[in-house]
Image (cartoon, rainbow, N blue to C red; front, side):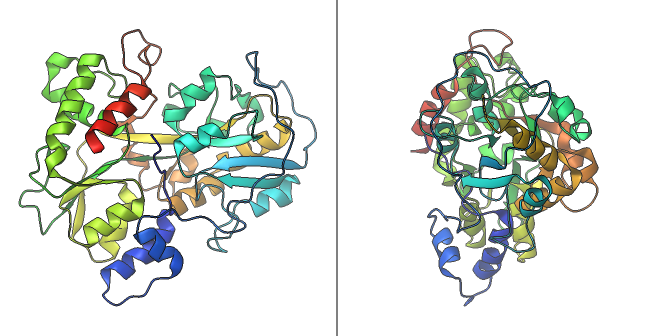
Amino acid sequence: MSVVRGSRTPAAIAGLVVCLAVSGCGVGPAEASAARGTVFVAGPGDGTPGPPVAPKPTPTTTPTPPAALGPPESTLNIVTFPGYAERGGNDPRVDWVTEFERETECKVGIREVESVEEMGARFDPEAYDYDVALVPPELADELIAARRVEPLNFALIDGYDATIPRLRNLPGIKGYGVPFVWSVNRIAYHTSAVKSAPEDARGLFTADGGVVMRDHPLTIADAALYLRDRRPDLRISDPFQLTPAQLEAAVDTLARQREAVRLYWRRAVEVVEAFVGGEVRVGQMAPYHAQLLARAGQPVKTARKPPATGWVDSWMVAAHTSRRTCAYKWLSWTASPEVQRRAAAWTGTAPANRDACEGLGGELCPDIRSVEFARRPTADCGGTGQGCTTYATWATRWLEIAK
């Protein structure tokens, strides 16, 4: 199942929200394309591919972290989602790549991908050669198990100790990833269209119409989280690691909700447009999307009662990279509070560095205690046992729901 991660960065969506909210406001070709739900392709300077190199063999041994680093290798190839490695192409004021290149002498090649599946394909050593990737939680475990990424020597990463401890120790990335940004799934509602303001996920799963939901297999976890307190007989602990019976209950909840769902959204602009157009009353969205709607004069608020699901995106190093020094310099650079503060503000997420929580981009930081962070569903229940359902099963069941 190919799920589009985000064809527009939140900061770029802001202008579109205003256009949608104001009658007669014109939009340019890129904005109009995004409004129709087509993929926005970054221009030169935003998705510059790395130089072609000879393919590497598939790793056959477990990679080990380096004890020390040598001189910079002069180049670094990065694969990421749009908006997380900016060099000024979308906005000349938004650039944390150019300064990195100047200070480290590591020339950066950036390849942007639109989906988790596309990113996973980029780690095929027979076809591509990348050094660092911003890996989402639903892909991290798979890359580690396949030996596509290597464990890290965190003593070589400046600023890593300032990473929020909970994020540093999350299962699925511990030992392999440097958390960069994180966010949470909020329940938003139109105050003029909802008679009783929803306090929690009950507003999503009991509404009689006008609902929007994220189009992603991990949305099943939101239903599982909803059931955790309401169905103690299911004994749900981790909403991302479900037994067959627990999965069936969550899927059944989503199936019963299906008639009320107006839209399963993949691109941020879709959910924003749906709220502006008055098509929906309640739905899932990131906090930043709700802020944009409020700034555009839309009567939209969010329910804040915990818990909620969320995610962390982490930088990981490709196994057996030949540009390890530049890779580690990038990890140190992006672990700094200055870069994380700017990246979080641009992407509408929260920084992983606790020192970046002060000021712009850190508004979400106090909510971290109540977030159930995503992890790839696995048969061994995330390494804690056996008898759980896999991500592939979740993807299949989600297709049955959202088709």
